[in-house]
Image (cartoon, rainbow, N blue to C red; front, side):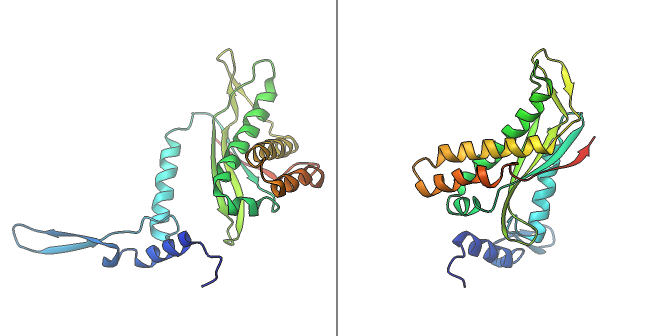
Length: 212
């Protein structure tokens, strides 16, 4: 077993292997009429499990759908640059900053489409720490309304989602919040300071599908 494997990973894999077996625990039911006994093994309920993870994803999607406004939505992905990922591997609490920065960038960008009334959009952000190849690849999926509620309580549609603006806002908010959270860490401050010059056009943001 590699030394850098986290205990949480080992625990999750162990649960996955035992999923649906009596080793995970079970419930026993007995018919009072015929005396027939049925044993039902417990599931692991891990999001990494092909069965349990799929069920959790479907449940989360259903819950999210129930909270969506009846307007058009846009899907965006915000990618954390490779230089910052080791900091977040060491300190997982920083992942909340990633979601906050992506949401703030989205709110600011949509609000700028109508500066007089600053429309406030609906935003849902989900942080993923691994890519499809299972490498440590932190990115945020954002689902936002294509528009927002103005200060005069009128809905303002927004159809323009310029990737250049989102990239720069994503960079600004992510580095701003990380610098504040890591102000006592000299190495982190040095890494953060280099990234404005290295990425003059901002960090990667993909403006993706439109949903009605």
